[in-house]
Length: 201
Image 1 (cartoon, one colour):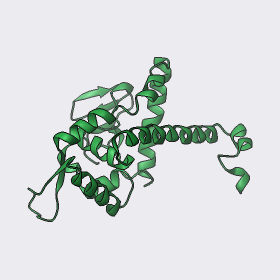
Image 2 (tube, rainbow, N blue to C red; image 1 turned 180 degrees about the vertical axis):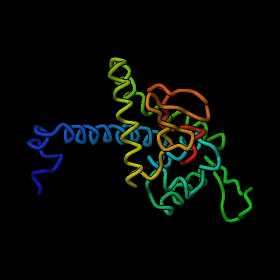
Image 3 (cartoon, rainbow, N blue to C red; image 1 turned 60 degrees about the vertical axis):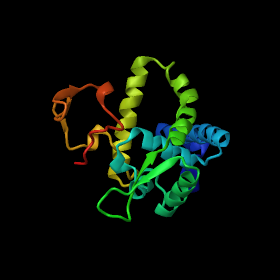
Image 4 (cartoon, rainbow, N blue to C red; image 1 turned 120 degrees about the horizontal axis):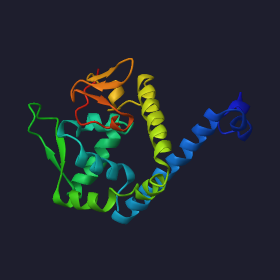
């Protein structure tokens, strides 16, 4: 029924989960606003900036049309169109060195690196506020977020995640979280949301 909506203030008063959902929606708006501000400065779309930033910090085998479409929850044609623009503006280089001549991975050109240096800090106004939260509250918030991301991925709502909980190297013991790759116990602050060594379980 419509009155049970998480966006209904009366529902929020009765249910803390509804308040949290609404809060997350407001924070998602912050990302959009901050990203659009940078996009206007450099004459790119938000998705084009996101692609450039992703390529900068992730291994090359993830920097292809198929994976980028999954990463950003958009269609392959949407990614292909964005890449065409970035290629035309000489911000990327297509690497066809794989065995399949039709597929390619994407690398940054020098101009692309310059654009990333101007745009990858778009989240700083948000991080500045988070930095002022008490450390214990931050640890609890991070723990809840990392579990939520994993659960959304298991439900098929979030298509890509590289968090410890879904990794083949992760093990939960009765007393702790453990990484078999690093061969060490993981404290809450050691749990990663975007691990370079992540391998799906």
